[in-house]
Length: 314
Ligand SMILES: [Zn+2]
Image (cartoon, rainbow, N blue to C red; front, side, top):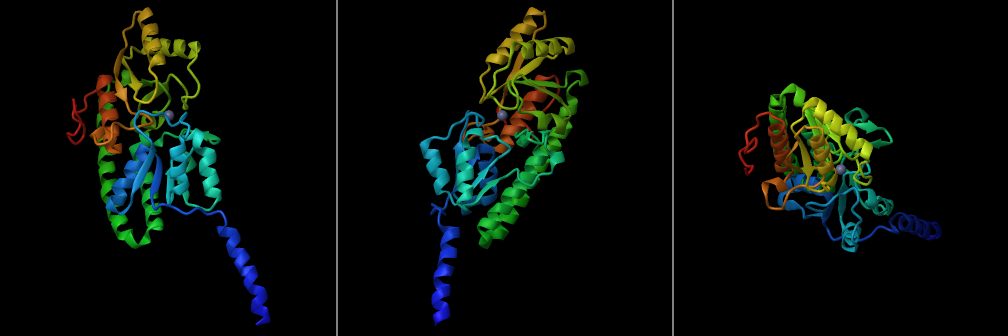
């Protein structure tokens, strides 16, 4: 009796310490970007409510969380984010919540260093641009759903396998169509450096006018160097992005025109945000199908204009 009287308060305190700050949740899964939300919904089906924070046309590098988004993150049962400093202005918020012991998971966690592009301190965060890498990320998300809700593990395992099969088909399609671009014209110029993983996966040189974050503006020297490169290689088209200002893209087109080379805008690409919700381009597969089709045809290759499964609009 005497013993247990002493032990009880100690045990109680120990338990209270680890759980002290853990917040109560509303049962939702919150994601930071559309590409993670879409994959999570594909795997979860009707078993989970997924709420995405950074939507269509918004740039995650510079996005400051709104009050409503802070609340969403605070109340979520599970938070899935990209990491690798993509969500630059949300880092503190995510870390604070993680420290309280609530599940906050970077979906890029666990990838090998050799799979990442860039220096070890600041790898390029845009890995959804390589469909085979995003297939691995889908596996990570599936694993987190199973850990989160193990009763439905069969459901998640089966849906993950089906979804990964679609992703593999898309990746195979990309490997078929990129080589149709004439070899001298395999240069992709976009507003910011979001496409390096796509370049590595599908054999195309990639140049962003801005760096891998949209936070710094392109300088005059960057633009002049790029203009010279385009003129020299006679690159026919450069591309704008749905979530980034096209000011620097226009400066490059004007610079090339002054040197007697016509560069056209090859189309709008989805870099860090997907298309409108409810459309094909508003899904990860549709977004990448659009990008692949637009780049290949814009640079003089041949890809079916309605995409790899006939779902793209002209
Ligand atoms: Zn970006």
